[in-house]
Length: 170
Image (cartoon, rainbow, N blue to C red; front, side, top):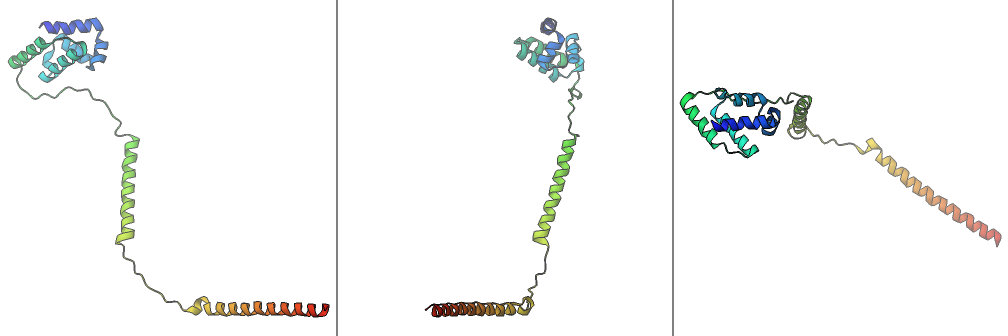
């Protein structure tokens, strides 16, 4: 496995940490890959690591990939192993996700109540006839007529006073 040595040379040249950062492959996984502990990985994982090295460092690892395929055909039984993965903890149980959930429920309940109040609740509407005397409309009308008469009588009195002044001056 000459190309396996190529991967070792790259790690020795750039350093384990910098290769890990550039390829996004964890350092413990790189150590296992360098030491030849291929049994701990699935065939797809090792081929994926090879593709990443080809892409990031511009090297040809076709021989390494062919060797890996042969190795897995000869030595490893086909079993379903869990795939190794890096788990990144998310804050999905955080304050804001709970807040949005409860806010959504509150809006949903308010919407249901609003629809019930405005569309499904049957209200009995009764027309109530109110007598005119209740508001005193007739009384108000008569007082307006009296005021009009008073205004008219004041105008007549003023005209009489003007005539008397004119007669007394003449």
